Image (cartoon, rainbow, N blue to C red):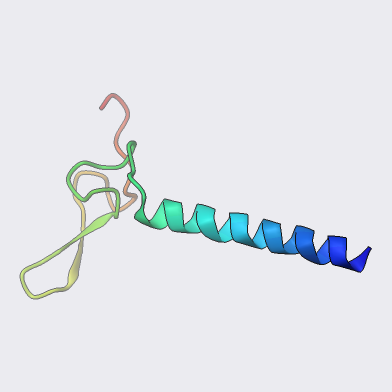
Length: 64
């Protein structure tokens, strides 16, 4: 019984990690086109500047 529980927890943990990695590195089809869905862009000196198009949310506006 304990073995089954550990296997189930392990599978759930693996699925969780894979989903997180896919979200971080996968394509963002509904993301803002200007900042690639990040909500910011890198300025000349490397600082993060909030995207004016999406207001920093990283999501595309409705109708786009």
